[in-house]
Length: 474
Ligand code: FAD
Ligand code: NAI
Image (cartoon, rainbow, N blue to C red; front, side):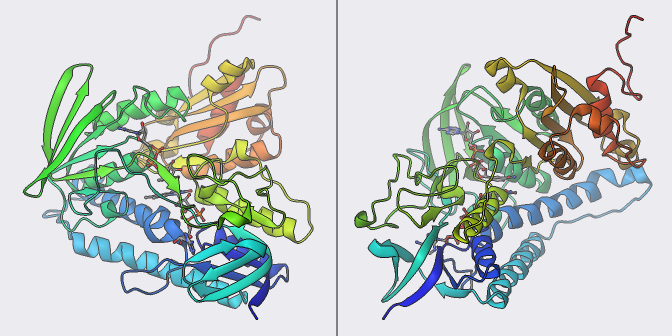
């Protein structure tokens, strides 16, 4: 007889392991199947996010920022250090140990919650049976959370050495002298910035002519200016014609509005999006539709066409973000338990961990314009914020967009220091249906970066204190 569970979760990324823990908390007999192995060939739950995504990239972002500070920014504080040297092997080992601590933590959490962890590749069969190697398991409910993998660019084959995806870009054994990044999305900007800080000369190619199309365009404009000043050479409208590897170097040919170009580089990182892991995952008899791009079709509650089978995270519509996957996991666990649960995909916060960081929640100005909603804008520059001055991080601004009639906050867009933390305050306010006046009436501690949010809210009604506001007629 197959072992039978209340719930089987396939995938132990931030979608799957969180869903499994929540199911177990609710008293459901739960199994979680995952096939990830680490360098030592050991199971390593946590998915893309913990193993080769959010966590290792942020560990390297932190190290590279410290290196840049030690080289160029400490002298202004009167701290003079000579002979700053990069030990890349130690930097990478630290990153690996942060990953190991967290993946072991997930394994421990699953065990402590009495989730049965099954290592291996799962395939969903008819009647809610899952095959893992020679074994079969069954459950009353299935949650598919198999995540995504880097997309390939036609004509540019990964070789794992000279032409790499985001995973390869987390493990170069020496700093490439010249680095080309194809794609100026989230991964390209975060990892391109890491290697620039560590000493690479970086240029980035992007096929379209709009920089960060998903961000508010006034923030994107500021970001493009800042990153270019930092030395990221961002070339837009580039159509890649050919890439070849000759004696360990890559030669890349592309066309843009200025003509044809050829560049020789030490490494190429391709970061042109990710595709869902749904290949050979579900037997035809199950009856679950997978669309042309490989995504599983679900409704707003992550229900597939088959009763009791759910899909969450990167394999379904919506942003490919860890916190979105986790929230869907919690929602589905509670739905299975017969509770009411929902998630608002329109207001998932986004963060790009560049320096300065970019973060937003809610609608962009261009989206509001397009839908014809009347709005009012308040902005505040970090250059006028005392804490930002003390930190020496004065680039950027906060922009709040409020409904013209009701004053309800529709979107908050930030580029600046610790934007990833400040956006959480905006998200809480929006979750509670706050108006810009609600934030304006709130007392913020001084001196904090959060005061910039307060001032941006005041500025919606032209009453910010630390920037000159337009004069009103009496
Ligand atoms: P995944 O994390 O991909 O997990 C899926 C798991 O299922 C994997 O372990 C996989 O091996 C396993 N699996 C697949 N098929 C099977 C099968 N048939 N049987 C068993 N197991 C299977 N998001 C953020 O929110 N913030 C960030 O800062 C951030 N940084 C990122 C940086 C990089 C470099 C990358 C690549 C991604 C980043 N992301 C970030 C995106 C984030 O990693 C994903 O959105 C998130 O991991 C999706 O979670 P998931 O649970 O859907 O899938
Ligand atoms: P992306 O969708 O963010 O960016 C893809 C980039 O590739 C765009 O700039 C696009 O114009 C470009 N591109 C596409 N086709 C191209 C071509 N043929 N030639 C040149 N350029 C081309 O995808 P990315 O950066 O790979 O990241 C994947 C996902 O991972 C993100 O969408 C995000 O959801 C997630 N992620 C999130 C992070 C975060 O939350 N901080 C960090 C890293 C990844």
